[in-house]
Length: 344
Image (cartoon, rainbow, N blue to C red):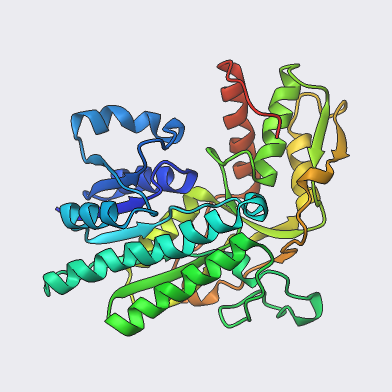
């Protein structure tokens, strides 16, 4: 039986990836999480975890090397999806050291754990996916952006401590492949969203606020940051299918890929789309909140995904409209259950 290890299984992407692997493979799925990790996104899996039915949680922390070594040696996974990170760009401006430590040094600690395991067992050859981010490209001036979108060889110009940390993550993945012959591949996934998306991200906080407005929990005002940033959206369920194909379709050590959806618009257009689905669309006003503005922003996030598509045959399947409907319904359901949220 093949084994997959997902760091960050309790996050949006990790939980959807676990769902995908359980449905489409016969692999056992091991999730690395911290003892204090919130379990909201994996509550539907907990019964299977308790019964040890193909889903297992191992407690480890990217900031604790010994816990990672122990987890790797215990699980010996065939496939590794390294998704865990301090993943909020806005937070990285106020917590840069934590962001850099978790994302760069944490990735190094994890890859070191696998390098040591491979040194001890020469027959052990895991396939490892290191998840970087499209944020590594940062602020590409419009006049320098290729007509086909941001391709893999565009220069990095990170625009936040988070983006800097993901640049280090990206380079570490390629370094371990080249220096130690490990089958490590790096992805730069562009904006991807859907149910379970954290409310610190723009489209999810829009949806959450709209759901709360519909329930008369807050005034009919949606608080926003920069609405001019251009984004290309993918559905998280398409994203995890891409990650599965990455590690199973002729994986090439040291390769790096841009992955993203096919629908591009400004953040403001995304907001207006979500409002158009609301039962109170005629009442909602848009208010700029200075605290939601970044010091600098990655404002032209449009990918060229031809390299990955040519290698794997992957194509996004879920429409932008379906993704936005599902995201809004996700927050409506949480509001319906009576959950209390921070106003962010």
